[in-house]
Length: 211
Image 1 (tube, one colour):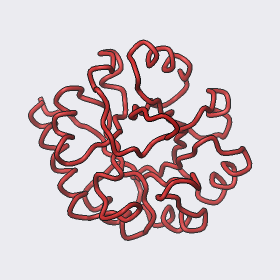
Image 2 (cartoon, rainbow, N blue to C red):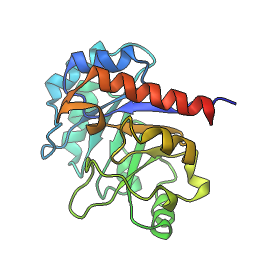
Image 3 (cartoon, rainbow, N blue to C red):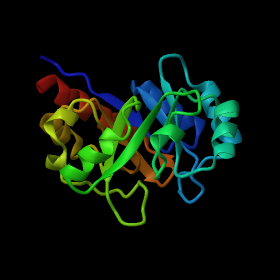
Image 4 (tube, rainbow, N blue to C red):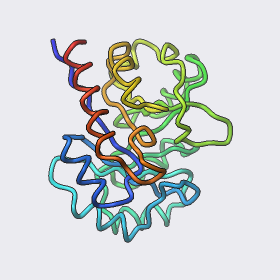
């Protein structure tokens, strides 16, 4: 039976890249509000992108240990549908902005992953990313997918070094709820490639059809 895997394209910085992703049928677009990231987008630019996104596509605002005022500014001016936290934010903080949220966890071992997951029971989903010391995400590196407990596989958002060459294998192995890609569909950091987006989406859908 075909398996539907949702797709999020993260690190959108331009309206044309948002349109390219939407035209391929992606489910969500990620806007990065972490100043240290090469995919960082200003609040003003993000508001323009968000206003142009059509109905039924989720706009996700990503933060890494941002202060409350900065997050509230984004919530008020961009009006994202979903918040994504990539730092050391605790559950109470993540849950305090009047928006549903997802929490990113960096995977090192299955025991620690289970312990971390239990701390965010209010999250709409857990995004599983590669662990690299001192780097909150966007490493462009995969991790050992077998570390993900069976019970988490079909509810997680899988991230970390995904591209058109490896995403089908990930979908077949894990049957995740969703996959999240950024660098794997770029011409350069922050600039997406419409052909790479198309190829990535095709690979996800084909894998789902045969899983």
